[in-house]
Each structure stands twice: as C-alpha cells, then as structure tokens.
Image 1 (tube, rainbow, N blue to C red):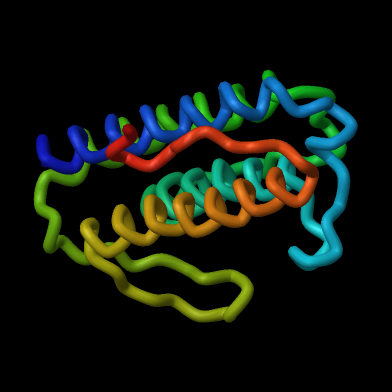
Image 2: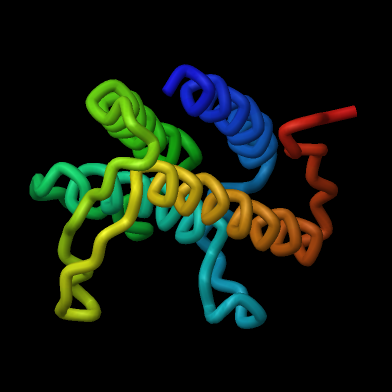
Length: 157
C-alpha cells in the first residue's frame, strides 16, 4: 500500500496548490453559484470533494457515521482546509487498515438503496479521480470570474 500512500501525497500537493490559489479569491466569490455548473460554487465543489473522501472511506468502507460539511458554513478557505484535513485522516486510516488492494469491500449505497462491492483499489482510484474531475471544474469557474489559476496538476511546470 506504500505506492498508494505515495500517490496520495502527490494528490495532496496538487490540492495544496489549488487551496493556496483559492485564498486569492474573495470569500463572497468562493460561495457564488455558477449557473454553468448546476448552480454550484467553488466552495461547494471543494466540500463535495472532501465529503466524497469521507463518505467512501468512513461510511461505506468502515461503516461509521459521518456528517457532511456544508457550504453555508464556509466563510473562507480555512473551513475548506479543515474538511480536507478530516479527509486526509480518513485516507490515512483506510490505507493503514487495508493492506490488499484487491480486497473487496461491501457497503451500502444509500441513494441507490442497495449494497455494492468494490476493491480497495477501486475505491481509492474513484475518490482521487473524482477530486481531479471537480478540480478541473473549479479552475474553469475561476477563469469565468477572470481569475487565472495556477498549474495544479500532479506534475507542475
């Protein structure tokens, strides 16, 4: 699992660039809804990413209760950072407690009202690719607000 831990550190580095960039965005613009993105805001997409990590690793994989971070609680990027700090803890717990990437994990998908099974590797891959999908949307939203985002890819120039 060491390779997945190394991979996650790369994801965290990319995220740090994004969150640092977001400190340059006015707090009112962080929560401004964008019609082109289903009326989501940058803060909402960031929290959605953190919540996704926590859902899949804490609730689905570990069968523990969780509370979702809410956009209405965001007054600045610091609240988003706290959400990702919790997500980081869940990733660490998950990778430390699941040593076989092929091991199946069964859990409930509450919105589908059914149980499903995914491997450790599938869950981990899903959550990190999900973050990058929404990061691209966030960068586009920033451009639409006339902000020029930094390069936040894993490999940066």
